Structures are given as C-alpha cells and as structure tokens.
Length: 390
Ligand code: GLA
Figure 1 (tube, rainbow, N blue to C red):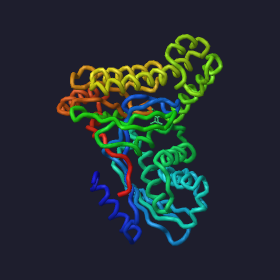
Figure 2 (figure 1 turned 180 degrees about the vertical axis):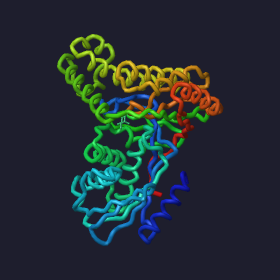
Figure 3 (figure 1 turned 90 degrees about the horizontal axis):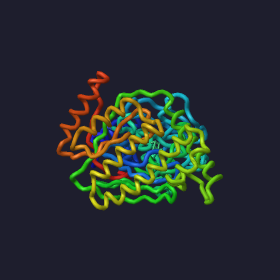
C-alpha cells in the first residue's frame, strides 16, 4: 500500500489514544493542477492528477453522541457532540473534518445520533498548493459514510468537501481539488469538465513525470485574493450575458473572440481577470488533442502560456513562482512549467523527463537560491490512484 509507514503510525497512535483499533481507515491523495487555472468555478476544463502523497483518516463509532477528533501530527484533540458541530475559531484544522461531517448529513449532523472517535495523519506538505485540505475532506467523507452506512457517489462526496471549505473553512473554492482526489488514477491525468461534472482519465506514458517545486513565498490575504478573482469572473460573466446574443451563465460560455470584441465595456481589471479562464479553457482543449498525439513539447508550451496568462492577466503569480518558471524554460529536459492551484505563492508544476530529475532540481535550486538565499523543495510526483477505503 502507498504510504504504508503513515498508515502504521496512525493506527499505532489511534490505538494508544482511544484504547482500540480503528473500525475504518480511508485514504485520499493530494493533487497537482497541470493545465486549466481558475476554470473550475467558471464551469470550464482542467487537467490535474492525484499525487502519491495523501492523508489517512481512521475512525471508530462512539457509544453515545460524543465525538473526538485528533490531528495525528500535532496530537491535539477537539471534542464536540453530534449536536454541537460548528465552525471552530481555534484548532481550525478540525473545520475540514467537522464541515464534512456536517454536510454528509445535509447540515443536520444531530441526525447521526451516535458520534465517533477519529484521527488523521498524512504526508502532504502544508501550504504547498497540493490540496492537503481536500485530501483530508475526502478521506473523512469516505470513512464517515462507511461508518454510518450512507451511500454517496464520488461527485457528491467531492461536493460535500467543497461545502465544508465554503462554510467551515471560509474558502470559496471550486470543485477541482476534491474531484482530483476522488477520481485520480495511477499513471494518468484527470480531465475534468466542470459544467457536466464529467471526469475522465488520460494515460501518461512512462517517459514523462511531474516535478513540483515549492517556493517559500508567504502571501498574506490569500483567501481574499482568491475570492476577489472569483468575484471578478462572475461579474464579467454577467456583463457578457447582457451584451452577447446567446445564453451566458459562466465564462465557459465566452470565446476569446467575444472577449476581444466586447472587453471595452468592462473595467480594465475585470477584463484582465476574465481573459485568463477563457484562455485556459482553450488551452486545455488544445492540450487534450496534443496529448492524444503524444506531443509533449507542444503540451508543455501550453503550460508556459498558462503561466504567462496568470502572471500578466490574472495576477495570481508572484516573483518566486516566476523565477522558478523562468529557470525551467532554460532547461531542455523540462517541457513546460506553470503555477499550480490558487496561486499567490505555493508551488509550480513542471512537466519533465524523469531521467533528468536531479539535473533539473539542481539547476532550479541554483537560480532560486541566488535570488532569495533559501532553497525551494523539488519533488518528483507520480500520478496516483484516487481516494479509497483501506
Ligand atoms: C484552488 C481551488 C480550486 C481551483 C484552483 C485554481 O486550488 O481550491 O478550486 O479554483 O485553486 O484552479
């Protein structure tokens, strides 16, 4: 099993803490976003992959309505009952789990009647843009639905996690992170269509891999910046609905030609924000046909274009991420690179020849260190299978 050592540590800690073995353990991976940035909440397209790092959630039923939840790394425990589930201001890590529990019961967890004792532990680096929070939500929803005998399909489970983010963690995210964690497959990309919530997997050959390069950029107001980008996209969609003679509900409905023609009616900033997801949708569709032909070089070029669009139009990049992408461009064994996820810090995703991984990591580290004094963290990522009950 993947990440067996984390599983063993979790089960040992669980037994010590609660005096018995867990009844159910579920696992969910983090994700990388490969192409299609900020398109999910615009009902667009994304290429992503589940990664080989993830989180386990172990749980056993309580005899009464009490719940205990322990973060296996910090060894802090939150206590509540099925009727007192609410967003917490302290030990905020619990919100991903309690929010998921809340929405598994449609906002009425008191209906569960009996509580549970749970603990989670994982190895996804926090703040790296690898969706450790979605992984926690997805292993929680799998384990708790099994515990309570509730049957939900994968997309519904992903939406439960997304609702937990919106209402308990305060991030107005799309569905990308949760869906990637659920639908990931070994050696494959997930191609998502967030209009139909259609998720298909696309095989990647063994001659390519991804490298994540984690910057040390710390950006304040990340959530506010994400929310303001989302708002600008929604404002732009409303505007296009009023000027185009066709139904427009989201930026997915707007073409690049229409943006060029009608952008003058938007404020400069809103126009800049809107063109990013519109261009990203086009790039994902183009990328899909390039992948079919096995043309990785051209696919990589789209990743570089995507980063430029983030940098120039959406302004969700930062100097550190730009430095990594610029350094990557000078290395022939890197096919493409771009920021991955929300932006404003976090990581870049590089499409690489895995046999040159050491050389690539050394070259990027050298450039980064010369500028910032510290080193980024470079790790080779294997697209891996999605969430499951152990
Ligand atoms: C974050 C969000 C996702 C998505 C990406 C950007 O990861 O959680 O829903 O919007 O940013 O593509």
